Amino acid sequence: MNPQPLSESDVSDVLAEDRELIEQFRAPLERPIGLHEVMSRAVLNNLEHRVSRMEQAVALGSFELARYEMLPQMDASYSRLDRNNFNASTSISIATGEESLEPSTSQEKDRDIGNFTASWNLLDFGVSYYQAQQEADRYLISRESRKRVLANLLQQARMLYWRAWAAQNTAREVDAVLAEANQAYAEISQVIENRQYTNILPNLRLKRQLFDLIRELESLSEDLTEARIELAQIINVPTTTNIELLGIEPGAQLADISALPVLPRLDEDPVQLEITALYNSTELAEEIYNVRIDQAETRKALLRLLPGIELSYNNGYDSNNLLVNNTWNEVGVEVSWNLFNLATTKQVLENSDLREELALQRRLAVNMAVVTKLNLAVYQYNISLRKLNQAREVKAIDSEIAKHTRNAAISSAASKVESVVTRAASLRTDLSLLESYANAQSSYGAVLVALGLNPVPETYLDLDIHELTNLIAVYDKTWQDGNIPMVGF
Image (cartoon, rainbow, N blue to C red):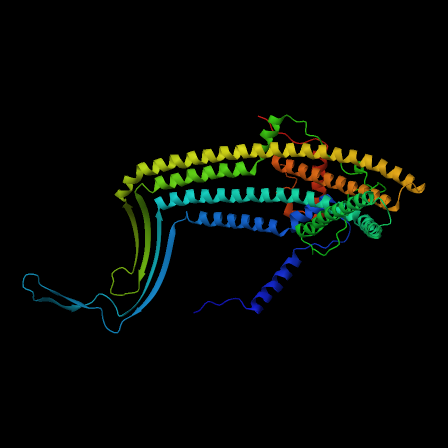
């Protein structure tokens, strides 16, 4: 047998199969979708989330298998024996060394043998019991891990939605302004090259300003457009899909940020926020489960120091007609004890103490990490709200500048290039404002993740996209209205 590398046909077959499977997990887009439907599609169709669900299912299967290890061991056997001669024997005298019995047998040449044995080792049962407990806790850890993946997925969906929405609703205007700006850039470059003005420095400055605006517009537009590709991936649709997004009230102006959902302010007591975050923390729950796993490991180690007691029952059958009894029942008890295990008692106890101390320190570290994550998320959220307000102020100023520039252009007091520069600067401000809003939404989602708030129920697989969308919308509106559920002791 030699190593067999993958051939082109092997890879092609796998890719074709994977493509078909991915298509099965996709839900078609038949209409424009909003934020909450994006979230529900991410929950139900995202492939990475499916991986975490399968990991949870595997952990549950391991727990189910571990429970069977506690059952007694049962063996049933049957054999058919055929000899070409008798299984005969004779005897000799120990005193004289002479044969004292003619050859004889108590066994037929052909016979059937059946046997059923049940045994139960109490020591193995105890070890298997704690092993099953450990597998149960590992399953619960996988469930907490899936919750964390789900929370991060919802936060990512929120951020990508608003960035993709900004790209979708500014694409046409960005293309138009960039076309005008590039044309104006070419014209002013021609003017400078022909040296039509004696004072060339103002034109060079205008050219530099126009170049910087074009570069900033392209950079902002590219960043927002990338979100549309990532959004397609997170809801598991082809990246070439033209996703139409909802998110602004009908008839509202694009740059009117007041038409978008209002982000709440966090005025709750910081201590209560920390308690809520710790109570809902999946990381802390995992560490508590790990403590229980370590405690069960200690009990397993202590059990192995005890003597093993095995109970057995045997039901046998032999078709040999020369036997007085062809069937029999047999019950046994066996006690075994490895005395050298006693020498490790001290080390087992010391190792147990060290393991519990490690679990405690690990839990305290996670406790501090959860609190730090929450405080950092709240701090960044407040900063994002401040930057959003600053972007609004800049938008108001640029709007006034654009209005006066238009009036000046009408009276021929400003050049065409300056008008384009002003329009490009105004559009850049609009993009920056929308990006600031998307960042604020992302920071708000990060706060929800840090608080451990999850709008998706455990029974979400029983819901369709419409039902899950409505449920997420109800929770999201409740929280955005400032009604965040707090936990107190």
